[in-house]
Structure formats: C-alpha cells, structure tokens
Image 1 (tube, rainbow, N blue to C red):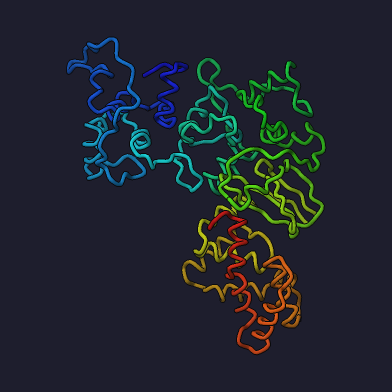
Image 2: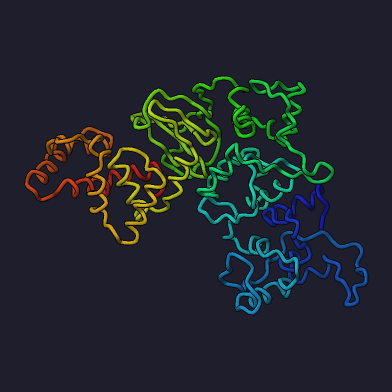
Length: 463
C-alpha cells in the first residue's frame, strides 16, 4: 500500500473513488481484482508458512490494464453473503480475492463498473460517514477520510459544499446533523486525536479576520484550511459552531446579498437565474406568501420573490425571517423537497395540489400525510381537493361566499401566477355555472394542467 502523501497514494485514491482511504481497505485484494494476470509482478505473495515475501521490490501498479470480466451481473448494494449465488459469482470474478477478510466490496464495484457513481443526490450515495459533524470535517481527521470515501473524492474539491451534501443525502436527518446543537466533534489523527476544533479560535471577531493576524491562523486550524477558500462563509461558520453566541459575536445580521457562487446545478430551469445568496438570519420584509422556494439540485436551495426572475441561494442559511413568521431552511424547505422525486407520481400530484390550494410550499408533515393517503388509494385527487376546499386556509386564500367568476380568477392568480386569458376564463365560468364541473373538479384540473406541471418542474427540477 503506497504511503500517505506520495503520488502513488493520490493515484490510488482517484482510482478507487476515495475508497482506499478507508481503514479496512485491502490493497492486495484491490490489485488482484483489477490487474488480472499482472498481480504476480505487483503484489508480493505470502508463502503457506507465512514466511516474509520473496519479492522485495514490487513494480508500480499499472493503472491502465484491462479490468476483470464482469461475472456478477447485478451487484447488490452490500457485500453478498456466503452461500448465495452472488457470493459465488463475485468469488469467480475476483479470482478468490473477495474471500479475504479485508476485501473492500464497494471499492471493487467502483473500479469495475463504469456506471457505479458513488456521488449523486438521488438518495443512492453510500453512507460511510456514519456520524456526521455539523460542519465540514477538517483534513487530517478520521471523519474527513470517511467523507472523502463517501463522496468519491468530491469533498476534496475547494468548491465542495458540505452542507448541501448532507441535505442531499441525509433526508429528514439533515436538520439535526447541521444544527448548532449537534455536538459531534471531528477526531484528529495522531497526537492531536480528540482535539475540539471549535475551541481553537478563542475570541472570534465580528467579521472575517485579516490574513496575517493570529485570529486568521487560528481560524485556519479550526476549519482545517477551509477558511482560506474564496467561497468560505465566516458568518455561516460562526453560526454553525457557536450556537446561541453567534448573534452576539457577529452583531445584528441583516439581509446581505453576496455574489453568486459557481456550482453545477441539476435544475436546468434555474441555472441562469441564481444571482446571489442570502445569509443566515436574513430579514425579508414581506410574507412567506410573496415568495417561491426552489430545489436547485445537488442539495442546494433557492428563493425568489413572486413576479421576479432572480433567485437567491439560501443553502447556507439556517433561518429566514419574514413579516409573518420565520422558517428553518432545512426542516421547512429542504425536508419538503426531499418528499418528492417524480413528475407524475402521487408525491408530485399532492405537491402540486397542496401548492395550488394554499399558494405556498407544502409543510413536510402535511405533504407526507396526503401523499400516503393518495398513494394507498384511500383518496383520489378530487377527494383530497375537496378536503382542501372546505378548509379555513382555502377560504382565507380564495375568499368566502364568492361567485364563480371570482373563484376562477383566483385560480389563475394563485396557481398559475398570472391574469386569466379571456377564452380560458370564460370556459371555466361556463363549466361552473352549468354545473358540468364543480369547484373541486376545476381545482384538480388547474393543479394537473400542463401549465402548472411546468411550474412544478421549474420549482423542483423534476421533469
């Protein structure tokens, strides 16, 4: 196994997608699994009597040699159990290497299957960092190595967003993980094992310390070098590590817009509309009803004022303060978006109907309930629409004792965000006046219209 810090070590890290950083990684098994007949010249073999290896100067691994034949056609998520057909196929595929106690199944699959993508936001990311810290673990800690393996090396990039990764992969647990109340601390290797990194900067200044000062150097140690990155958010770090003392340290936080960060977005509808970012504690002097929230992809979140084309990223904020209430970005926004993963499934239909009826982002628990009711065929979409229409919130939103024309106009405004075209408005008024369609029917029709489905795709990125 090449030593840490050498070029061979870095090459192996790239080749295995970060898996070689795991404490249980078996270098010999990896070479056996990926080098076919070249292993005799690469790995010194132990004799039956466990004498020292006879080959003392192994050749360098040949990176571009052919990969082994694929025998295990449908690899399971975890190492197959002995006695199963999958186990036998894996044994044949690896030439027996998979029987070794230290064989790394995940690493083998990563280097032999071109479609084995270790880092996605679709809920398939292998969770290797079992107990995540609230902030990005520093280089030199055990947690850093585990995160490196989990993300396939992506976390080593300067643009990697730890918070977005946790939001994208931990679902509802993300809120607790990223909360300042999460007291899990990274464990450093070597002589500094157990150091509490949040104690390094003893007296945090109100703003980012200047380069060359003692505070700058202390912050560098505390963040494992992350504070040297151009996109490092000092305010975000203080909020994540200082808990209730953060506001006192930083003073009053007002709405601050920063230049947009450079990152790859999966939501193609919003790619060119993200123009800035809101910091934690931002004050927006309007109601939550006046804003739209967006899933930008890769765990990133955004917000825009209704009627505006500009979107501000809110991924690095914990709380946003509106005139009617404050919201938690993770538990109120990210968790809601984590409930939907399709364009036309029960989750999508209930998200659209909820948004149509109440003109707001669904709350996670409510959305969960209605998805379950609809998915289990306890209620069809019209029955759910009926429940929404008789609610007090719907009456407050659309008005009480209104005529059919007002009702139809409000549908256009609240659901589609526009004034009605004359032809469309007259059609729905006739449908309602004639009794051909009830208000329940019309609400469901607007919710599942092609125009509203497009709006849904723009918000969620799901097509």
